[in-house]
Image 1 (spheres, rainbow, N blue to C red):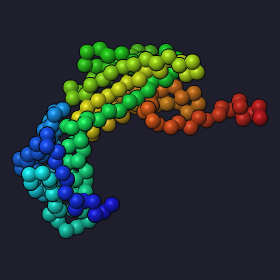
Image 2 (cartoon, rainbow, N blue to C red):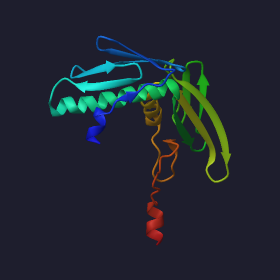
Image 3 (cartoon, rainbow, N blue to C red):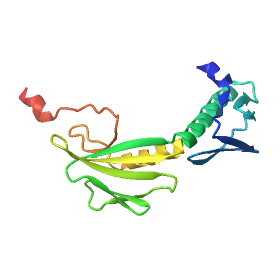
Image 4 (tube, rainbow, N blue to C red):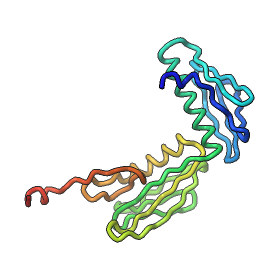
Length: 189
């Protein structure tokens, strides 16, 4: 994995990459993403590829080189394909609703929790009826910025972390939860 940092990044035809001082800008069919470059790294933009080079010959410089390469790859993928995260709200009476630029979460508190969504993130809600789990609300978040998308999804999940006994709360779609057995089940056995 350490040698991946030397590999050039190929630029698709519909993507344009520009650099101004320590800023990098990636434009594509879905939009534009901007990022900052580290002072330990330099990039060389050619017609169809980008080379990431370390300025310092140190362990920290090598780490920054690999990180910068991954961030640029994520930017290119974001403006061409986009990113998506799906959260599931599970619990009796738990639901979500969109109110303009905000998402309101009704998750067992005395009043709904309202979170403001950035302009770069699109949100869709879908309710699925389930016999064994009750109503499940699916929150689909889409964006071209991977880091911002992950931050917003984590902030939504933190509102009500799933209970290990009944699994009530907000979780990611592919997150595996271990169910604990209660104290009564242990005493009866």
